[in-house]
Image 1: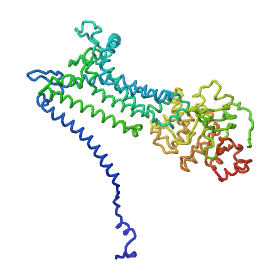
Image 2: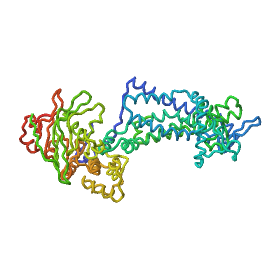
Image 3: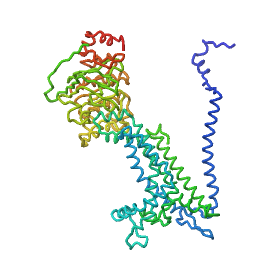
Image 4: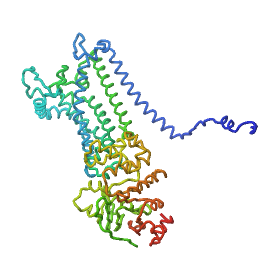
Amino acid sequence: MQYIHVASVPFLDVVESSEQPIAFRTTRGRGDRVYRGFGYGAGWLTLAIMGLIGGFLFYQSLDAFRYEGFTFFTETRWITSVSGGRFGIAAVLLGTVVIAVVALVLAVPTAIGTALFITEYAPKRIRAILTSLVDLLAAVPSLIYGIWGAAVLEGQVVYVSRFLADHFGWFPPFHTTSLAGSKVPTTLTDFTASAFLAGIVVALMILPICTAVMREVFAQAPPGEKEGALALGGTRWGVIRDVVLPFGKGGIIGGAMLGLGRALGETVAVALIISRTTDVHNLLQILKTGGNSIAALIARSWTESQGIASSALMAAGLVLFTVTLIVNAGASFVVSRSRSGAATEI
Amino acid sequence: MTMVEERVPAAAAPNVASTLNAREVSAWFGSHKVLDRVSLLMRPNEVTALIGPSGCGKSTFLRALNRMHELVPGASLAGTISLDEVDIYRDAVSVTEIRRRIGMVFQKPNPFPAMTVSENVIAGLKLCGLKIDRSTKDDLVAQCLRRAGLWNEVKNRLNDNGGALSGGQQQRLCIARSLAVRPDVLLMDEPCSALDPTSTRRIEETIAELREEITIVIVTHNMQQAQRVSQRCAFFLAGENAPGHIVETGPTEAMFTNPQDQRTLDYVRGRFG
């Protein structure tokens, strides 16, 4: 046994010499351990599958990268020939982005309006019905949207397209030249199978996810702040403008980006609607016949491609995979950092 | 039940605060009756304190006074509430106008966190659709913050976020925000219950100053506070299965020293509730 001579050892020293952080120990029961193991396992498995897909795409596309080099990212042509061909992602990626942007421009305001109506205006009874109706839009198979767009919608949209081109042609994206040559006036057939049409259909397809995210966020707008705004004599619109929208900003951006991720990857509907072109000028005229999309390119060319052409499609897939991954990660980053998003999962 | 009901002539002179008069007000949530025929005259230049145990209908009554009660789905109301000579539920005055004239400060400070301090002060004008030019804006911001007793603490932080202030400062910011729309009446629902003693004292001083211009109705659970800030008290009580009603009203002094009803005495002495 040791004695400490209090007289000779200052009290503080005693305290300091014994000041050792405690190692926290948690004893976990068996059920807890099993569940933890299961949870960790499932989490890692998801990451592993993601990594494997990315790795597989990268490995398969190496041949194409070696063949085409860096011009894979700058070349606009995509030509498959017996002697090898040229494979460039530039025009296809541009076409993908054009369709996605058209879809977002149409879907985001509609989604904001729908979400606001459901959370702020609709009577309680109608709210549930509307919510499930919007969600039901997501349950319609992509293929159905595609054939509906090509067979039904196109015949109506060409008139809208021609109207926009005739009256708002000064707005660069709406400027349209005839397929037969720039001197020839446009006809209705110049507006078929356009990026605009594909964008409308994709907008319908991403509307449910955008609306769902925004609705969830708007519904969480703090009641205290809403009451504060009402008590100041605020109108319903004032409350939305000053409380709900500022609060839901993160959800709006997140919902839009999540929609963008889907829009970029949308395949069958786009493949059925657009007539593919790699002419950059044509791609930038959104109303005009002709568009492009990575997913549609792969879907349409996969079966008849082999060797270097199929490796090039893998490379295109890798680009799509990377872009959507970045967009989705960006979306969850924006949402989780915003005030409203902290409690929302997307 | 003792009812001290007195009539005063309607305030006629300009710059005199308004009178708020509740007659036979009953309130329900769905089929559940929470208030039973409450009558109360809230006089100009006086602070009326609503006291009573939790769940006796004070807050419901307060929220009925500026038509916030009806925001709860299924809520209903009977009786008459008039602001000077205007029946706030029946006359052709818009609900937003009523709420602008009868302001409210809540238990939990609720500044708009995305707005700066000065934007918070003038938020009500924007919400009411009132336009204001730049120089008047700065004057109004300073004036309202002074009246709310917050100016000295925030005059160099006007562009900070409203949410960055302390709880007590946020509550005074909410008072300043209410004052900016020039209300005739200010309703306060336990405005100090979430605040520390120093902030509470600042708010009580603010209430004392505002009384000169505005009719104030305050719900409080703090008997000392009721004694310090109010000139008149109304004691609310709800029975086991009976809705809340007013047991007694009177000058604060009398209510605390010599109430007519034994239950009032028990309550203000802290014997129940």
